[in-house]
Length: 140
Image (cartoon, rainbow, N blue to C red; front, side, top):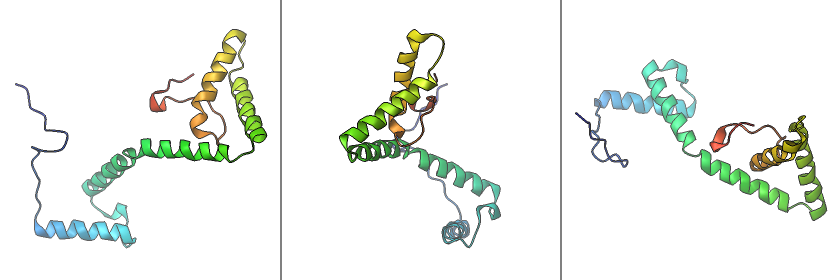
């Protein structure tokens, strides 16, 4: 027996209801968290779980947009530099990538340096580091 999945829009999902007292309590807790008169640790564990799941999902839903905005801000930061300064800065970062990739197998070092350099273009103002597995990249 297969279970039919609801539409991604949420259509077909049942709406859960709580008592008016529970609703007022949750509302008061939400505003208490917002204004600082309550701390999350004061609330029941189930409410903390709901809060943390919602927070994590909300934050994750903006990760791609934040990444794109950070790349755009870094691009504008680079473009604001004089040409010679920008060129020297980018060549310095490429040299740093080559140092990270400095291994005995000389033939692969430049390719690896280039991969590290490209992987670090989305955080141009931060120090170079080996690429992580975030955003579909593979570790070096």
